[in-house]
Length: 153
Length: 153
DNA sequence: TTGCTCCTCACGTCACGTGAGGTGGC
DNA sequence: TTGCTCCTCACGTCACGTGAGGTGGC
View 1 (cartoon, chains in turn brown, red, purple, orange):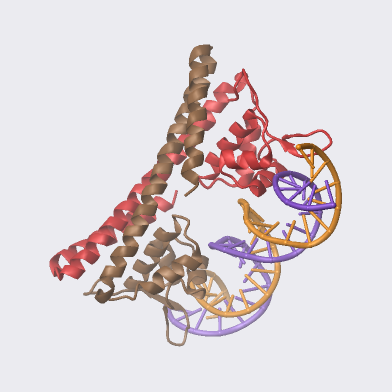
View 2 (cartoon, helix red, strand yellow; view 1 turned 45 degrees about the vertical axis):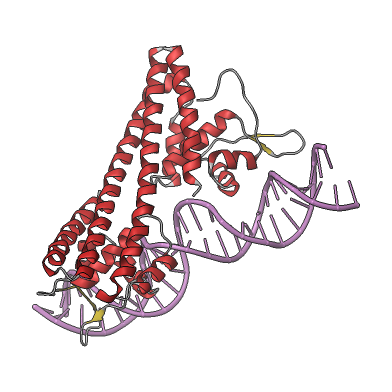
């Protein structure tokens, strides 16, 4: 999704700053084909990133953040043929990714609740409230079971 | 948070099934001191897990799920002295972890919105809606900026 | 005895990170 | 010339995963 009116170029350091990924990772992703080869400066041989490159990198970073392997990311990106004709395929991939994120978000919520229950448990212990302590102990155990099930798929 | 009335024992395979972590990871965590040494069966030498062990493992799994390093997890667990006297310290650690989870959840939401904008972008491209395409392009770029900032701290 | 699970130890692997040693533009 | 950034290539590292080779209880 690059701007159709203006295109700037950026050094690897600038690209790293703009995307939040370290320069070493940008080189690594390019070397294994997760991102397409970026342009090089004449005579210097330095990488020159444009807006489309940055956009691609941000998208890869989003995929990586959900624990996708680099092999899968490469297939994913190769599939996205670049161009309006592939819109249908892109939407399909994006929808899958959306679902992955939804599952992850659900697990995050569970973990947050688990930690909250643990906080309340220790507060009950501190207050010497034996009944509440036992109640929260049971609750924590039940949540643990949920956490285990959520990790499977 | 082990049950005070009954304690069962479990093999490493059962412990793996109950916590969702592979047996190899349970051995690894024990070997580097992230979880305390578990009991061994007389003469067999096989690991025997009890409810307190399982609880500890689930807690470690929760910490690991937020990207905490094993070194930090070890310090964290060592600090939790086990016992009601450490309730205050436990609550402090748990509160910190809660905040880590909240930040992570915020990033998840951002990524979900980013993917959603991308989906709508390609739908606009597919529909040939140039104005909406450009609008969503700008929106995606703005979100990318947010994503970058969220990854920093 | 035959499976089955468990054990340790060592090496493999995945996704980078980190120098070493060298080049290019203000 | 002096910094500064960039380059490649190779090796290091972190968190496990995966055998190899062997033991123990029904």
